[in-house]
Amino acid sequence: MCAGPSSLFEPARRRTDPRNLVRLAPLALLVLAGCAGRGDLYVLLPGKGGHNGALIVTSGDGQRVLDQPYAAARVSRTGSVEAVATTEAEVRRAFGPALAAQPGRPVSFYLYFLADTDEFTPESKQVVTQIFAEIARRPAPDIVIIGHTDRVGPVPYNDQLSLKRAERVREDLRKLGIPKVRISVAGRGEREPEVPTADEVPEPRNRRVEINVR
Image (cartoon, rainbow, N blue to C red; front, side, top):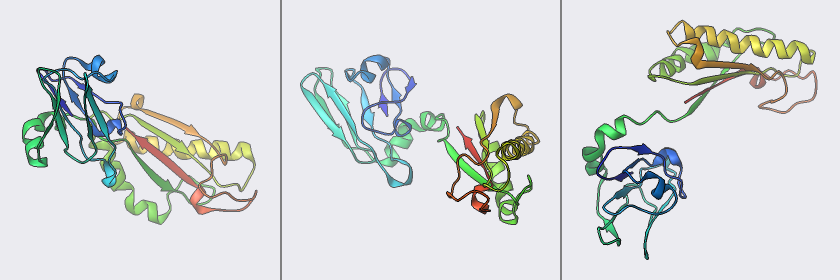
Protein backbone atom coordinates (compact mmCIF):
# COMPACT_ATOMS: atom_id res chain seq x y z
CA MET A 1 0.00 0.00 0.00
CA CYS A 2 1.31 3.43 -0.86
CA ALA A 3 -0.07 6.61 0.65
CA GLY A 4 0.34 10.02 -0.90
CA PRO A 5 -1.59 13.28 -1.21
CA SER A 6 -4.57 11.68 -2.98
CA SER A 7 -6.43 8.39 -2.80
CA LEU A 8 -6.00 6.54 -6.07
CA PHE A 9 -6.11 2.74 -5.94
CA GLU A 10 -3.83 0.85 -8.27
CA PRO A 11 -2.19 -2.62 -7.98
CA ALA A 12 1.60 -2.83 -7.81
CA ARG A 13 3.60 -5.08 -10.08
CA ARG A 14 6.95 -5.71 -8.35
CA ARG A 15 7.59 -9.16 -6.88
CA THR A 16 4.32 -9.39 -5.09
CA ASP A 17 0.82 -10.72 -5.60
CA PRO A 18 -0.96 -7.61 -6.93
CA ARG A 19 -3.94 -8.41 -4.73
CA ASN A 20 -1.75 -7.85 -1.65
CA LEU A 21 -0.76 -4.29 -2.44
CA VAL A 22 -2.77 -1.12 -2.88
CA ARG A 23 -1.28 2.17 -3.99
CA LEU A 24 -2.58 5.60 -2.99
CA ALA A 25 -0.59 8.28 -4.84
CA PRO A 26 -0.87 10.59 -7.84
CA LEU A 27 2.29 9.28 -9.53
CA ALA A 28 0.87 5.86 -10.31
CA LEU A 29 2.49 5.38 -13.70
CA LEU A 30 5.91 6.33 -12.36
CA VAL A 31 5.63 3.90 -9.47
CA LEU A 32 4.40 1.07 -11.67
CA ALA A 33 7.42 1.64 -13.86
CA GLY A 34 9.68 1.38 -10.81
CA CYS A 35 10.19 5.06 -9.91
CA ALA A 36 8.74 5.91 -6.51
CA GLY A 37 7.22 9.32 -5.89
CA ARG A 38 8.71 11.55 -3.18
CA GLY A 39 6.72 11.73 0.03
CA ASP A 40 4.91 8.46 -0.67
CA LEU A 41 4.47 5.71 1.94
CA TYR A 42 4.52 2.03 0.88
CA VAL A 43 3.11 -0.78 3.02
CA LEU A 44 3.14 -4.48 2.07
CA LEU A 45 -0.14 -6.17 3.01
CA PRO A 46 -0.16 -9.84 4.07
CA GLY A 47 -0.85 -12.44 1.41
CA LYS A 48 -3.65 -14.95 1.41
CA GLY A 49 -2.96 -18.10 3.40
CA GLY A 50 0.16 -16.67 4.99
CA HIS A 51 2.08 -16.41 1.71
CA ASN A 52 3.77 -13.06 1.19
CA GLY A 53 5.47 -11.56 -1.81
CA ALA A 54 7.98 -8.74 -1.72
CA LEU A 55 8.07 -5.16 -2.91
CA ILE A 56 11.19 -3.24 -3.91
CA VAL A 57 10.87 0.50 -3.31
CA THR A 58 13.46 2.40 -5.35
CA SER A 59 14.12 6.12 -5.62
CA GLY A 60 17.36 7.56 -6.98
CA ASP A 61 20.16 5.59 -5.34
CA GLY A 62 17.98 4.46 -2.43
CA GLN A 63 16.27 1.09 -2.20
CA ARG A 64 14.33 -0.93 0.38
CA VAL A 65 12.93 -4.45 0.12
CA LEU A 66 9.61 -4.99 1.88
CA ASP A 67 9.08 -8.71 2.44
CA GLN A 68 7.20 -8.95 5.74
CA PRO A 69 3.52 -8.21 6.42
CA TYR A 70 3.01 -4.52 7.14
CA ALA A 71 6.64 -3.68 6.40
CA ALA A 72 6.75 -0.06 5.28
CA ALA A 73 9.03 2.47 3.62
CA ARG A 74 8.72 6.14 2.85
CA VAL A 75 10.37 8.09 0.05
CA SER A 76 11.54 11.37 1.57
CA ARG A 77 11.32 14.76 -0.09
CA THR A 78 15.02 14.49 -0.86
CA GLY A 79 14.52 11.16 -2.62
CA SER A 80 15.97 8.80 -0.01
CA VAL A 81 14.10 5.62 0.94
CA GLU A 82 13.55 5.27 4.68
CA ALA A 83 12.20 2.32 6.67
CA VAL A 84 9.05 3.10 8.66
CA ALA A 85 7.96 1.18 11.75
CA THR A 86 4.27 0.31 11.57
CA THR A 87 1.78 -2.24 12.88
CA GLU A 88 -1.37 -3.87 11.55
CA ALA A 89 -3.47 -1.73 13.89
CA GLU A 90 -1.84 1.47 12.64
CA VAL A 91 -2.33 0.48 9.00
CA ARG A 92 -5.99 -0.33 9.55
CA ARG A 93 -6.52 2.89 11.45
CA ALA A 94 -4.88 4.99 8.76
CA PHE A 95 -6.24 3.18 5.70
CA GLY A 96 -9.47 1.62 6.98
CA PRO A 97 -11.76 3.11 4.29
CA ALA A 98 -9.25 2.29 1.55
CA LEU A 99 -8.89 -1.32 2.69
CA ALA A 100 -12.65 -1.70 2.92
CA ALA A 101 -13.02 -0.44 -0.65
CA GLN A 102 -10.76 -3.11 -2.11
CA PRO A 103 -12.57 -5.69 -4.25
CA GLY A 104 -12.83 -9.17 -2.79
CA ARG A 105 -10.12 -11.62 -3.72
CA PRO A 106 -10.90 -13.95 -6.63
CA VAL A 107 -12.24 -17.22 -5.30
CA SER A 108 -13.29 -20.59 -6.78
CA PHE A 109 -15.93 -23.05 -5.65
CA TYR A 110 -16.75 -26.59 -6.79
CA LEU A 111 -20.08 -28.39 -6.82
CA TYR A 112 -20.47 -32.04 -7.74
CA PHE A 113 -23.28 -33.88 -9.51
CA LEU A 114 -24.93 -37.26 -9.64
CA ALA A 115 -24.05 -39.37 -12.67
CA ASP A 116 -25.76 -38.37 -15.93
CA THR A 117 -27.77 -35.55 -14.31
CA ASP A 118 -27.64 -31.89 -13.34
CA GLU A 119 -28.61 -32.77 -9.76
CA PHE A 120 -26.18 -31.98 -6.94
CA THR A 121 -24.70 -34.78 -4.88
CA PRO A 122 -25.88 -34.92 -1.25
CA GLU A 123 -22.53 -33.49 -0.16
CA SER A 124 -22.83 -30.52 -2.50
CA LYS A 125 -26.41 -29.90 -1.41
CA GLN A 126 -25.10 -29.38 2.12
CA VAL A 127 -22.74 -26.56 1.09
CA VAL A 128 -24.45 -24.97 -1.91
CA THR A 129 -26.36 -22.45 0.22
CA GLN A 130 -23.13 -21.30 1.88
CA ILE A 131 -21.39 -20.96 -1.47
CA PHE A 132 -24.22 -18.98 -3.04
CA ALA A 133 -24.41 -16.71 0.01
CA GLU A 134 -20.68 -15.97 -0.25
CA ILE A 135 -21.08 -15.08 -3.92
CA ALA A 136 -24.20 -12.97 -3.37
CA ARG A 137 -22.59 -10.85 -0.63
CA ARG A 138 -20.12 -9.39 -3.13
CA PRO A 139 -21.46 -6.07 -4.44
CA ALA A 140 -20.80 -6.64 -8.16
CA PRO A 141 -19.36 -10.10 -8.78
CA ASP A 142 -18.13 -11.29 -12.15
CA ILE A 143 -18.85 -15.01 -12.31
CA VAL A 144 -17.62 -17.68 -14.69
CA ILE A 145 -19.27 -21.10 -14.38
CA ILE A 146 -17.63 -24.06 -16.14
CA GLY A 147 -19.35 -27.42 -16.30
CA HIS A 148 -17.54 -30.76 -16.56
CA THR A 149 -18.33 -34.46 -16.87
CA ASP A 150 -16.54 -37.76 -16.46
CA ARG A 151 -15.67 -39.88 -19.50
CA VAL A 152 -18.74 -42.08 -19.46
CA GLY A 153 -20.77 -41.55 -22.64
CA PRO A 154 -20.19 -39.96 -26.07
CA VAL A 155 -18.23 -36.72 -26.28
CA PRO A 156 -21.10 -34.69 -27.85
CA TYR A 157 -23.47 -35.87 -25.12
CA ASN A 158 -21.01 -34.92 -22.39
CA ASP A 159 -20.54 -31.49 -23.94
CA GLN A 160 -24.26 -30.87 -23.62
CA LEU A 161 -24.43 -32.33 -20.11
CA SER A 162 -21.58 -30.16 -18.86
CA LEU A 163 -23.26 -27.05 -20.25
CA LYS A 164 -26.57 -28.09 -18.70
CA ARG A 165 -24.87 -28.33 -15.31
CA ALA A 166 -23.33 -24.88 -15.68
CA GLU A 167 -26.66 -23.39 -16.76
CA ARG A 168 -28.42 -24.98 -13.79
CA VAL A 169 -26.00 -23.23 -11.41
CA ARG A 170 -26.44 -19.96 -13.29
CA GLU A 171 -30.21 -20.11 -12.88
CA ASP A 172 -29.84 -20.82 -9.17
CA LEU A 173 -27.60 -17.76 -8.81
CA ARG A 174 -30.01 -15.57 -10.76
CA LYS A 175 -32.69 -16.43 -8.21
CA LEU A 176 -30.51 -14.61 -5.68
CA GLY A 177 -30.76 -11.44 -7.76
CA ILE A 178 -27.41 -11.64 -9.55
CA PRO A 179 -27.90 -10.16 -13.04
CA LYS A 180 -27.51 -12.57 -15.94
CA VAL A 181 -25.06 -10.19 -17.59
CA ARG A 182 -22.59 -10.79 -14.75
CA ILE A 183 -22.57 -14.57 -15.23
CA SER A 184 -20.79 -16.43 -18.03
CA VAL A 185 -21.22 -20.16 -18.57
CA ALA A 186 -19.33 -22.79 -20.53
CA GLY A 187 -19.37 -26.55 -20.86
CA ARG A 188 -16.05 -28.38 -21.22
CA GLY A 189 -17.45 -31.88 -21.35
CA GLU A 190 -14.89 -34.52 -20.43
CA ARG A 191 -11.86 -32.52 -21.68
CA GLU A 192 -10.58 -31.19 -18.35
CA PRO A 193 -10.89 -33.95 -15.75
CA GLU A 194 -10.00 -33.31 -12.15
CA VAL A 195 -8.95 -36.96 -12.02
CA PRO A 196 -7.60 -38.43 -15.30
CA THR A 197 -9.22 -41.75 -16.24
CA ALA A 198 -9.55 -44.09 -19.17
CA ASP A 199 -12.59 -43.74 -21.42
CA GLU A 200 -15.92 -44.97 -20.01
CA VAL A 201 -14.61 -44.98 -16.43
CA PRO A 202 -17.01 -43.25 -14.01
CA GLU A 203 -15.36 -40.72 -11.71
CA PRO A 204 -17.51 -38.67 -9.29
CA ARG A 205 -14.91 -35.92 -8.89
CA ASN A 206 -15.04 -35.17 -12.61
CA ARG A 207 -18.80 -34.61 -12.55
CA ARG A 208 -18.54 -31.05 -11.36
CA VAL A 209 -19.08 -27.36 -11.91
CA GLU A 210 -16.33 -24.85 -11.22
CA ILE A 211 -17.48 -21.38 -10.14
CA ASN A 212 -14.88 -18.63 -10.46
CA VAL A 213 -15.81 -15.34 -8.80
CA ARG A 214 -13.97 -12.02 -8.88
